[in-house]
View 1: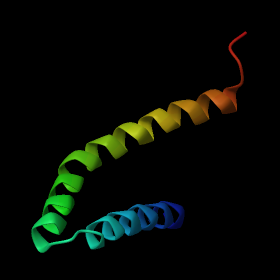
View 2: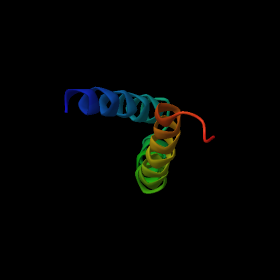
View 3: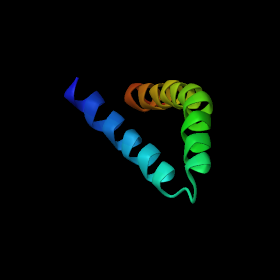
Length: 63
């Protein structure tokens, strides 16, 4: 679990950095809300795609 926690923290750091770059509280709130609503499903999809790539690399070429 430690590896998952480490990678998830890296994502959280990006999230917070993006919110802190906002020029107003409204922009920060929009960034957080949209980031959660849109990015969470995208991260899940990216994880699944990465699993496919890693599995394919581990299994080698299809001959």
